[in-house]
Length: 385
Image (cartoon, rainbow, N blue to C red):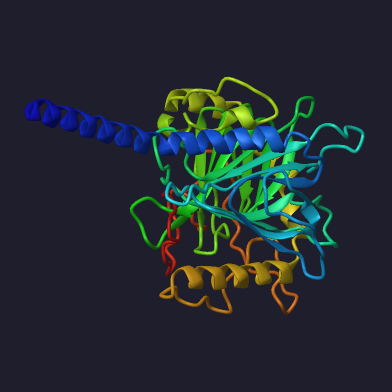
């Protein structure tokens, strides 16, 4: 009898242990599923030029002298022009938090298409700052700065932190200014901005197009981004673009397989990665002069003081995260198109004349994304639970 009771007790303990292990292994997938379900349930009625609180937690800093209502629980909305900075929490299985926000932008969509909006879906360790002020010709959040975690998925079912952007049906392309670089998009893209892998003093912005096509311009150089490829731009520790974009390249499949496409307005089958030969074929039909003419000048409307304030705010935030972060020099170069305090435009070495091969991005004096400029920098702490 005692032996039977002992065996029963062992069996019971083993069963409880198995249940605990299974529960622990499903914590992260369940958290991701619940968060994305929350976005679908509470943010469906988000209007043009509004942001919706999708899942906890999100911290919001309003524009100066702007009063805002509640933005603390899923379903709360706020006008984009009231936002200065939005900070989302990384995935944390212990606290059961994973910040998710949905934005609907007008960008350059005509007023005659009031129901058509650009979708921004932000998730995980993301900070986004509005670079549009009252004097800008941009619509709210059409120009922005952001940074994110990279390689921080908390489990196989979770995507890495980042920002997804999708253009609406019936609109050929939209124009954005991303961290000082000009971008056109007629599709769906996934953006990240963080430290270069295995580096503590190099930073980058990556743009992966998973449907349609995009184009990026910085420092006078233009690169196309066909679906199934990605490009990178070098950045300083405050995530200002510091050089020309690299040529498009095949992307790593597993970094895009878990993106929350289900929460976007338009559903589609993501483009699988192109190989380099396929990318080269797409580049052969690309007209860089036409793209450059369309994109250049977007950054001219960015307010110089606004950018300096943003750099200072980011530096303060990063110093709080990492006390060893070195202070930025006052004479650090501003992004292209931003005037210096004395009213003189920054001296930018012009790249040499480009031939018809946009992959020739390394022939000039400005650093290309494949040759990132080294700055004294400190890795931003990564999220990931």
